[in-house]
Structure formats: structure tokens, C-alpha cells
Length: 240
Image 1 (cartoon, one colour):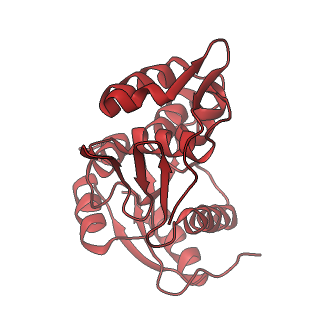
Image 2 (spheres, rainbow, N blue to C red):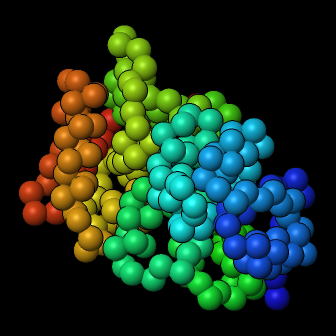
């Protein structure tokens, strides 16, 4: 049994196989979603910018521009970097799945697939996104670091805004929300990158290094706990 979508939520389906598109559209519309479609990467990017969908069902094997390239473009654009993405593909290899999740996909479903499972996964992703939406003016402060969760902005007292990538922002937010507690590298991979905990933990170290550099002296608040992971020093409580 599938649950209906929230009225007004739009899904963009990106696939160059008409039969697959028709199948996915039928079940999504039946479940209450508004659906748009695109058959190529450039069309998908343009529609994502103009329609601001709640979620994109994205095929990997597209003509001219792969789904990976589309995902990278979406995450690099401020207008589309936060849109949820469910990758739908016939490519079952683990490296493809890991690459998609590392680039920022929210979930990964392989063909052939159950239409009912696809609808359930779409609903689950959208519920997670909704729960993660911060309240207006919800601000998290740790020492000189100020995180505006409504605006996805990070500022430093007396030093203005810090330009962070989406991944760096999620990493800092995770550490700040769990400040004072050690976060293992594997746990950070699962939370920030949504990847398996034993895949490329060195990725966390490289992002922490870049994050510290961008934060300047405030970067010293991110402590390395040798043999375990990282911790943001306990500081001032959250203020709104």
C-alpha cells in the first residue's frame, strides 16, 4: 500500500526510456504527486532550476550527460543544491552506488524495480527532508561560529560569512548539533555522505582539514580524537 504525497509536492523524473518514465509517472501521480519529466541531463537541470521540485528521480545512463554529471551540477548550483535526489539505474555495481551517494544522492534504487517500493522510497526521502527543515531563525552557535539553519549560512563573529560547500556545511552542522561528543569517522560518513561506514574514511579527514582552514582560528574548535574521530568543543548553547 502506498501513501499519498503531500499536495503541491512536485517530482521530476529524468530518464530517456519512455516505458520507464510512463511507469514511474503513473505510480507517482496515483500517489498524489505532481510530476514533470525530462529525457536528458541539460533538460533536467533547466527544469530543476525553473520548477524547484521537491525530489528528482534521476537515471544514471542518460544521453550526452550522465546522471553523475547532472547530480554534480545540481549540487554545485545554489538554486538546486538542496533538492532531494533518488538515483534509479540499471547499474548495480557497488562503485556506482558509492559514487552516487558520495556526490549527494539521497537514495539509490536499481532496475528492475518495484513501483510500490519506488513510491515508498520517495515518500521516505521527503519525510526526512521535511523533518530536517529548520524553523525560521533557528540559529546554532558554538563559540564564534554561528550557523543559520534556515538560510544554510555560516558566519563568524566579527568576520562575516564563511563560504562552505554543501558537504562542508553538513559536516559542520553535524558536529555542532552533537558538540561535545566524539563522532567516529564512519558515523560521519553515514550521516553526512550517507555512505557505508567502511568506505573511504580518509574522505572525512580531508573535509575536516578544509573546514578548519575556512574557519580560521575558529577551526581549532574541531578537535581530533586520535583513533576515534572528531569532536566540536562544547561552547555556548543554541540561541534562536
